[in-house]
Length: 97
Image (tube, rainbow, N blue to C red; front, side, top):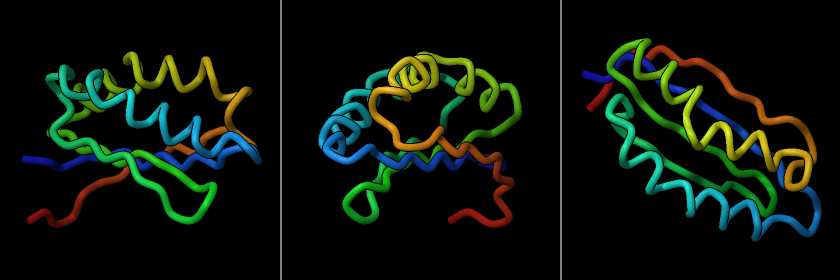
């Protein structure tokens, strides 16, 4: 059962919006092979605001994701693509359907 999550908010630099969207779409295969990641969503709200929301059964899965390939790739490209550093918040899920 999912009890934990991560909420990452990304603000694209002007002119880099499509590159951020493409990066997020390209990250799906990495999320699919993470055993501890139960659900993974990449999203966009507004023209330059993007993010990731993913869920986990335990802290081990969440920590593995935070140290995984998606996080490494995001941080490697953050200066190039993002207007500000990503905001990554640990979330406790209170109810899930």
